[in-house]
Image 1 (cartoon, rainbow, N blue to C red):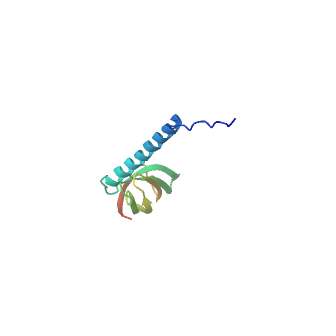
Image 2: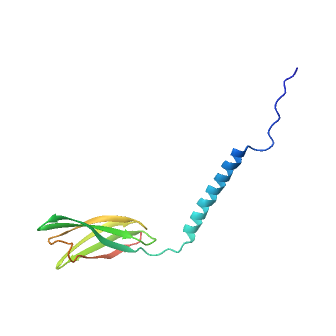
Image 3: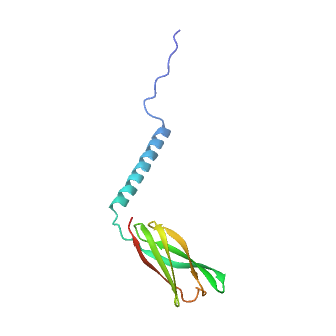
Length: 126
């Protein structure tokens, strides 16, 4: 007696449909994010330096500065200046990515917790 082969399934299993749907949703989500980023208006870098920590003692103080870029473009060669009384200290950061942050250290002879003024002097667009 010849053996009978089972009839092939005519419709895909449910798990196959679920995985196909998840793949479609993931693909559409990635495309939507890429499209949103491509069409979003770009803005210049927005550099914001802030005193993060102070180390040292009389005669030599180190001010740790956190520099944030809240803009939507990267800034390169970022110059940060700190002024404390008649002292001025400056440092340059290679780059601060959009939405990113970096840290630098500025040295002073006085305690920088009292009256330190920080500013971004300038940067270039890479």
